[in-house]
Amino acid sequence: MALGGSAPRRYAEAMLDLALAANAVDGFRASLDRLAAAFAGPAVRALRDPGIPIARRRAAVAAATAAEPADVRSLMRLLVERDRIALLPDIARAYGTLVDRRAGIADARITTAVALTQAQRDDYVRRLERTSGTTVRATFAVDPALLGGAKIQVGDRLVDVSLAAQLAELGAQLAS
Image (cartoon, rainbow, N blue to C red):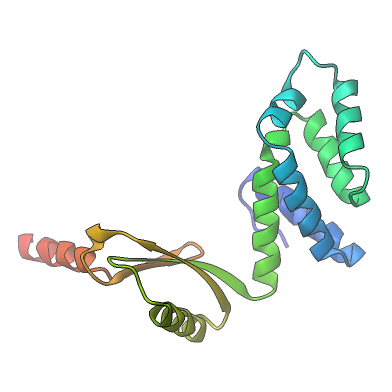
């Protein structure tokens, strides 16, 4: 199932394999999301502080994760021991992306020159779902520099049908 790429993605893939074997995909997701929120800022700094003995850092993580699934506790212990605890939010995000992909859900970012009505937003989502064959979870943004049209990013694919992009293409054609 390896998708290649970054360390957080590799950890997330391993966690998904364990979650599938334990039939606990949603439980692992909830656990990773909870821990990513809890282990932020000062907590991460403390867990990475070489002035604090590793035994104390391990004990703190063990106490904080006592109610979590065993495989998630093991991941947390590993991240602390390898000084990679700062990766936890990225691991949780990558895990969520993998779970969504397995469920046929794609995240999309739609940027337009003006704010859209709810009906227009729904229309964009319906058209994206029809063309992609997946369920689309969209976020919308406004960028007046686009002049008109839209930029649509689904996963790592970007479709730029903005007026600004069309004008730039026309300018390049006229210049050549």
